[in-house]
Image 1 (cartoon, rainbow, N blue to C red):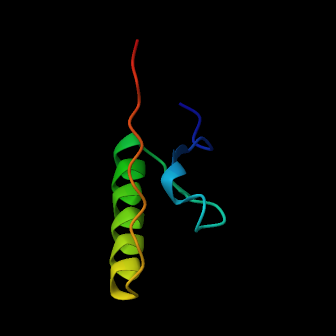
Image 2: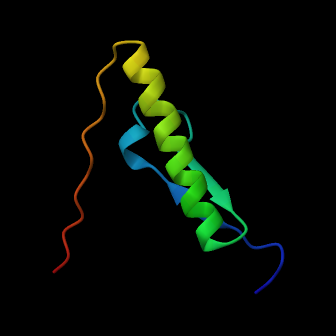
Image 3: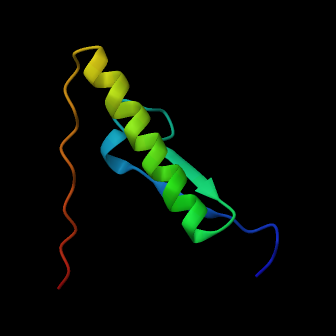
Amino acid sequence: MDENWLFLVAIPEFSDRVLMPCTHGKTREEAIRNGEEVIEMYLEAWQAEGESIPEPNTLQIA
């Protein structure tokens, strides 16, 4: 794989509250870990501020 490639993680549930709700990593595993960290960071901040938490989306697979 090209060393300039990145794996992108988008968080569509946060798009109403965050300008660009996404993160990335050089490997799939790093991108997933970074995505989990970003989700936890926002959820903790919103809970601390007393804000509601966005409902998760469910993907439908045919």
